[in-house]
Length: 300
Image (tube, rainbow, N blue to C red):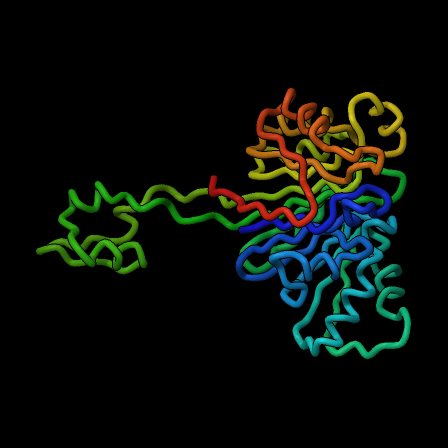
């Protein structure tokens, strides 16, 4: 599982940063969280392919989070895409996405399905689920938690050896095949640990600090939370439905997540190290996201 930060700017793009967009490669498919202006160009500079995007989850309909969609969809058509695309968003999603799909003159060559979601909604997909929570922002906004299904337990090599397993039989057991050892049958479940929880990625969208996102992020593998400003401006930012790096780190600590990435930076911050330092002071496993950064999500 790999996260690619395509755009980390807040409100509008800058010379250093593109508008909000995050690609998550689940290995089976590519999932896109938000699609700000210029996202398709960022794809060309990244390790990810926009033609592999299977689903798009839009947090809200401020322009810096969805205006890249018309160009992305039309480029997919121009590149002869035939696979379906699913678009997800807040309760007003159908109205906005319908406009996106009718914008300009082009031929849509593949099926697109629109899904309007509400806070607390859960969607079961191919090998993972996505759950929503309500963010605190001036317009309807969703935070998302993408979580893998349970993983099978770890292979216990020492126990396998104690049961007489040798040589290539290790690989057969790991592949799920039972193995005969003398008069005994050793089953995969005999040498596997208990099932493990799948990895969970939480994306806040734009939001002031709120209990709903903290709850959504509980014990997530990675929390991606907006940090538009530093602590010196957080009171003003909160009034506009945004958070500081300090507040994002407080949420990560309270939610007991493994790692925090902060993103959606105001254009006033040319250097991001002060925001990272601010976050690390509250939650040590904090990092600032940068455009085109790839991050491999570790197993829990």
